[in-house]
Amino acid sequence: MFSEEQIKAYKSIKAPERLRGDSIGAASEYARKHKERLLRIRAYSGIAACFILVVAIGFFSMNATAGATAPVLYFDGNAVSVNEINVPSPRTVSYSNDGQVAVMLELKSKSTATVLAENSFLWLDDSEETVTEFEFKGKTRFQWLATASEDAQFILRVSDADHSLVYILRYDAETLLWTISERPASNNN
Amino acid sequence: MAVFCGKEEQFASAYKRNADMLYRIALSYLSRSHDAEDACQEAFAKYIASPPPFINENAERAWLIRVTVNCCKDMLRRRRLRDHAPLDDAMELSYTDEPLSEVTSLLSSISVKNRSVVILHCLEGFSVEESAKLLGISVSAAKMRLLRGREELRAYQNKEED
View 1 (spheres, each protein chain N blue to C red):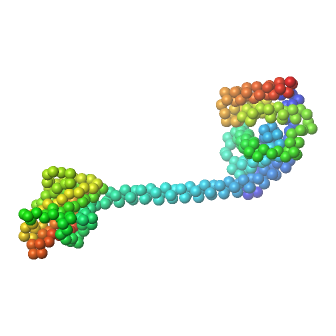
View 2 (view 1 turned 180 degrees about the horizontal axis):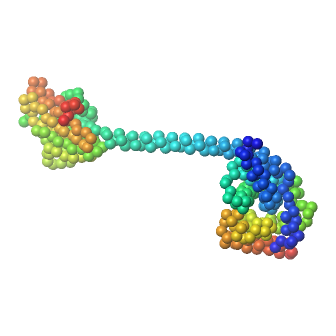
View 3 (view 1 turned 90 degrees about the horizontal axis):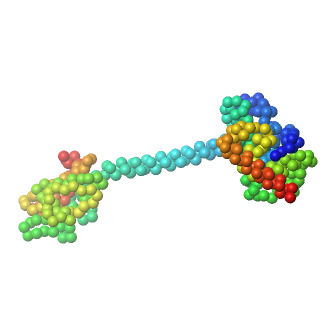
């Protein structure tokens, strides 16, 4: 393939004298660039790690919050709180001649919750029968049925794995008004 | 000198052992003396700046050859992108030494992929196994590249004779 003469000529090639000095000169430049590149990579890695950390914290805290969110009872679009709300609106409440009241409510819960009515009944939107207890997850609409009597008070218990809430539907015989409220947490048990 | 980190002697002996061979390899690849110098310079600069721990001189030589060959390939790639060889560069190819000029023209007829095995085996005198090890490829791949390189060379020689 290659003649002896050609190989001999090839082997006679020598590196130029200046190559050694030039290599040393280039080394410091290379070391500087290498260091800069390393610093840049470290900076980018740090930023990426921080970003991942922030995203992870956000994700986990969101899940943790979601898990800890208590069920919420809505009346007429408003969350029922410890402050009493009058329920006279014909849009949300229907009264019958025998003094029965049907309060339209909505419940939201991110975890499975149990709803239990004491001395009253519940009527789910998609059900034909009244019940005193049901389980649900997500969103549900139902009517809370109670019959008016002297200063009557009706209890609705909503509980999931972490929370236990108590709602009170009260009838005032003097004012003839129905009110709904949440029992303060300290009294919930 | 700060850049050596106390490894000045190591570099001096590595340079003495390998500089001529690396320059020849680079020159065979690139056919231009200043490009060959740049490739060797880059390889030695990498060696000085961050020398990997070598088990022996052979491992050191293999590392330097591989780095030089990679530098040459990069330079050829870059050259292909902006291939406007100035006239004085083109003139460099015509060596005064006729056998050497023949060697470079023969090598330039071989594809870049196959050239390194041909250089190491046929000109530097390494066995096929050693060449494969130096280039970090399998022995069968080295044999295949050598075979193809020879075919390319033969085709070029036949064409020249015609």
